[in-house]
Amino acid sequence: MWLFNIFRRTTQQVVINHLTRMERGYICVAGIDLATLHHLRLLLRRERLKTSLLARHGGPFDIGHIVALKHGRPKPVPPHVEDCLVPLSQITVIKVAESGEYWELLKNISRTSLREIFGTSLRQLGASSYGTAAGQGEASLGCLRLKKRPEIYLGGSPERPRIRLRLTDGELHVDAPVTDLRLYGEDHCSPLASRVEEIKQKIRTSQGIILSLGLTRAFAVAPEQPAVHWLQVNNLHFQEKPVWRLG
Image: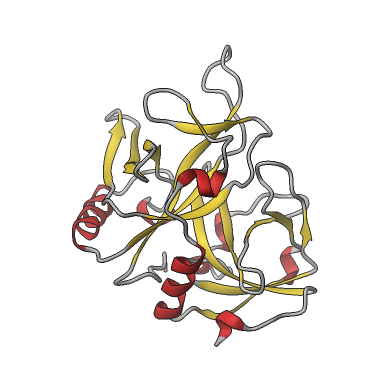
C-alpha cells in the first residue's frame, strides 16, 4: 500500500489535503508526506503558487493528488514549520489517492483538540476568533476530527460575502473563515452559494467530518492592532466522498 511505503528523502511523496484560495490568481497548497506523516506546505523559491498550477488548468494540484517532490528544502519559521521550498520543475503527479486509503490517512493524522494541533500559543482573539501572536506557535497546519457537527454559513455583507464555519472541539468555540478553493467561483474569490448549501447538507448527513486547518501569515486587522496568525478552515473532508476534487 502506498500509505506505508518508505521513500528516499531526495524524493518525497505528498498527498494534497490543503487547497486554499488566496488573493486573486494565487493558491496555497499543502499535503501529508507519506514517509513521515507530517504536513508540508509547498513554496516556490522566487514566486508564489498560481492558479495555473491547478489540475483543471493542466497543473499538478488538486485534493487527493499524490505528487512527487524532488530536491525539497525545509524552510521552517514558527509557526509555519511545515514550509518547504521545491523547484517547480521537480513537482510531478503520480496518481489520485484511493478514497478509502485517503480517509484512513486523514483519520490517522487528525486530532480531536485544536490545542493538540497548534499548541498552547493558540489563543482567543475576540469573541470567537483564534490565532497566535506573530512568530509564535508549534504548527500552522493540521487536521481536526469533529465529534459535534459544525455550521457553515455565508457572513460578511451582500457586497462582500464570506464563507465561515462555526465549530467546537469541546473546549474552544470558534467562528473561522473558510478558504476551501472548491467553494469559490472561477475567480477563486466569489463564494458559490449553491456549493455552500450542498456542504450544509453534507454536514447534516455525513458519518464523518475532518477539517484541514491552518494559520495565516501574520497580519493586523487594523493599524493599531498587533499582527496575528489567524486560524482558518482550509478544507472540509467527508467520509462518504473524501477525495472530492476541484476538477
